Each structure stands twice: as C-alpha cells, then as structure tokens.
Length: 148
Picture: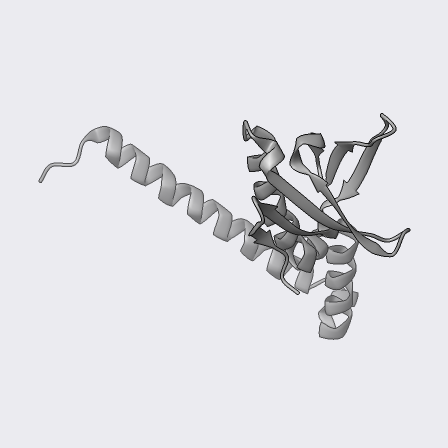
C-alpha cells in the first residue's frame, strides 16, 4: 500500500498544526500560572469565571431555552415554506393578556432571529418570541409541542 505525496503532506501539516495548538496552550497555561496573582487557584478560578461571564460564552453553551428555540425555529421554518400554511394552527402564551392565543399559519410573515413575525388583523406586524410558542397543530392533530 503506497501513500501518495499529497496525503503525506496532508498528514504532516495536520500533525504540525496539532503540535502548534498544543504548544500554544502549554505556553498560555504555564505563562499565566506564573503571574503573581494567578498563582492562587481561587483567584484564577474567579478570573476565569469573570472572563466566561463577560464574554457571554457560558450563556450560549448552557442556555436552557436555546434548544427549545432551535426546535421551534425548525418547525416554524417548515410551516413558512409549506404551500398550505392554513392547515397549521399555532398556539402561544401572551404575557400581556395572560392567556394562550391561537392563530393560523397563513398569517406568518417572516422568521427573524428568535421572533416569529405575523400579520395582525389591524395590518400591523406582531412579533412573537419563539420561546412563547407552546404548540403547533396540523389539521387538528398535534404537530409539535413544547416540553413542559
């Protein structure tokens, strides 16, 4: 079994890149460990947490609503592209009125970030946060339901 030169180059550069990443990490790990205040593990922990919280990374990785929004976004995107949107009924919780409201999928205008935009009866646009959507049904049968 003969390995081509291009495959050898690929393996070489892959290993070379991994070695570079490991050496960079080792340098950061050892270098920061010798800073006067970061030698104390508790101070190092606090500084690390402050960095994670200020960057927002910890909120992106451990957001309990993110999975819900991702699932409902897929379902609503499917409805938005579906030719017979009027078969779908969407139920969401309106915080102002303190009740569940249902509407037809035919009034969906657009999906933007974490909002569903629908045409209201008055002609205005209504922005519904994705996490407020509780149930989607198609022809009377449950198509998607939010986890309780």
